[in-house]
Image (cartoon, rainbow, N blue to C red):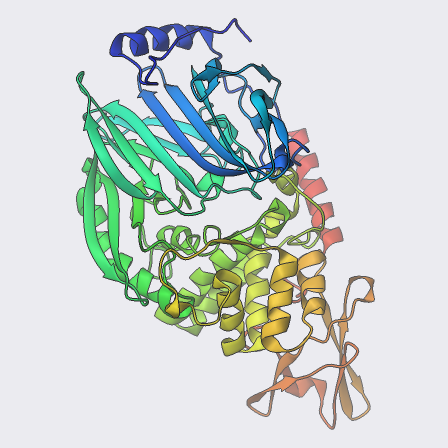
Length: 586
């Protein structure tokens, strides 16, 4: 790394125009402009140290100049925290490619040490358990530039069709430390965030929460102050900057809240955005509120920002880049999926990436449920089956233990390959075994901690949930132990197989599971034109006085199981090896 460039903000923490421009130019030369970072910096959710376990983040306050021409940022981040144990040092995660100007607390400079992934700040004195603290880090530099957003994220610096700047952030897989010094772990979400973002006055900033103020600066720039006062997962914090136009309405929530609904569309696409807004925004809101419960952030807004990447579930300001296209099922799946994350990912979020299927699998299942509603059973079954064919038979949905984002993905070969596909099928099969009423009550309790969420008024509290929490809630709501269901479907890779044998005048159905795990999953069977639910005991069911050829197993695709169309784990491994060998020979 090159020698740091020292640029100093004024005593008020604001940057003068001259300082900004000079600092930006020198910083651009002095800082690395490549995307090369350590593996730790480019990962998120790695195990946290004892020092990080000693505090809880209360609030982030981010003040940044966006230096468009240099693709750089300059400003500060204030981290307010509460001590969970006595503290003499604050440890944060932070990209070391930024140049730190100074770190202060209460106007006093603090000493610090920086490693490849950590920023270790020596506090003025010991902070006792239960006390609050705050530090401000002043820094500048060139943030990581996204190479394939949102999957390989960072800052995206693009232009609109008319040639104006179009900037967005996305860092679900990389973490908040590529933007500001933070506690980069999903188990600790701030209770609120303030963003003061200064941009050229031709641009608009769309971010989380409520727009408090737009301050006109004296040199052709303006500062947007956005504020959210609810728990927000770190990757749900976002900037969207462009020559936006606002498309607005008000939605009356199921709990009586009047919710502002805003779509920030680039000028070039205002007409298409208005058509999508008018045709789908309110109907999508109505669907989610009717099926699962009230929009959780009604006191702030429903927000969508058009982005130069496909999309991301940024809280109260979902990123949208699907080019206003309806899919084969009659609606904009991307708009619907990212909006699902306001419930599955933002209202309920996971403290460990091993449980990420709760975000993605349940979020993806909502498109299947919506397809069922607007297009009918045949279309929903088609969508389900396409998803089924992409299940990886080797990987569980949620492995036990702690996983970072990269560990879960493992270069496309880890459990993350199943969080959408198998995850949505787990939800679908749970819906069958519990029945609609108990299933949706389970989902509501998972989200809100109650089966009657329409009685809740904002602010609605966000919660952390794990796979084990989900299994416990399903068991409590249904009045039966559901641990066997989650053990086979979620914790194990290979799918259960249903064997059917003729035994004299009877048909015997037997579930075969990995390691002979107990699995008394009921099965719908069509017999003489009607569908019966067949219950199992010790993995076996006997149907008396029937011929195997007269039965149709699971005619409506309700049960996740191994079918002939899906390769086994061994077959998938062999196919991958064959594909790699063919690629190497080319």
